Image (tube, rainbow, N blue to C red; front, top):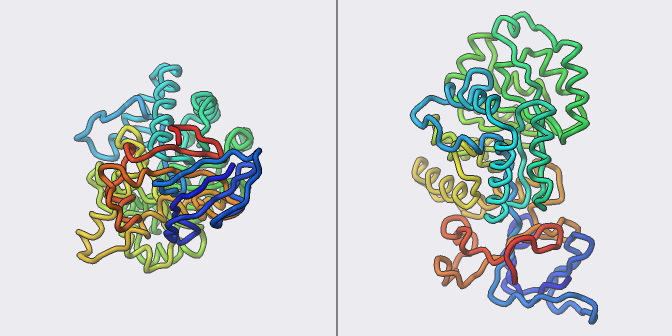
Length: 396
């Protein structure tokens, strides 16, 4: 396939190129330059008036709770999403599986419509939960990275005594990992250090929630005398999620051990738990990516996530932030943290991208393409979405 006469946000720095051509072969970008020669056999798309941007990489979701949208809005984070006692856990356990699958599928279709081409899900429910999500998305072309979870949560006394993972749970973990892309752990406060260190020996993607609330940070110190993030790093995670209350020391250590941090600012705000400090994270040298978190709290919409993060951060810190940095968090940085060939338009990366109408009512005239995408664009500005070189939503 040849895409002609298109504007593009190119490479890892999302450099704006006003007009070029792009050749796609075998699901990947193969040539990016003006005036590419074609043959009669090549499918050709004239994309005059369109801007090509990388497909969004939604690095943290919980689509399993799609059936519980806006349940108990006025409750605390602990009451809503605690992995054992929270209302979310009770809903997931007591709802018909076919209903859960149907609403998960709806959420994934919503992501596709909004330009999300890859999502990373922390899937509860053990092996059965993983299989249910796979079934729900089996007919959707969306790229999924499913991080399964053992239904195993230790109490404070077990954590204090450093009780290890039982043998039958080790066997269950091995089986779980044959069915998914890695593990997504609830947090250090539900796992002893020996358990976290056992998880570190697994050879697939490892991720963990950390320092999401003041209460969780305090609880870790009360139980173990140690920082929640420092304990979470026993797992040697590829990335940590939230880090809303991580200290500078936590962030510097996380940068040395992990690939980066995934933040979910709208979810934190929805739970009245604060806003992640991206300025502190950048100062520590962390790579930051974005996720939309629980569907029961948020729509899985990266346009909203970028817009909110950009403006609230500038409002809090009273300083300008280049919108390109926010857009990188939704695209390039996700691919970097996951170590996948996604999130960037360059040779030999997967041709996952969004065709944006530069003449859309909310965008024209587009003087700053990065700002336009971050705080003006929405689903209505999308002409088409491509995954692996195939248009899977919309049309040119």
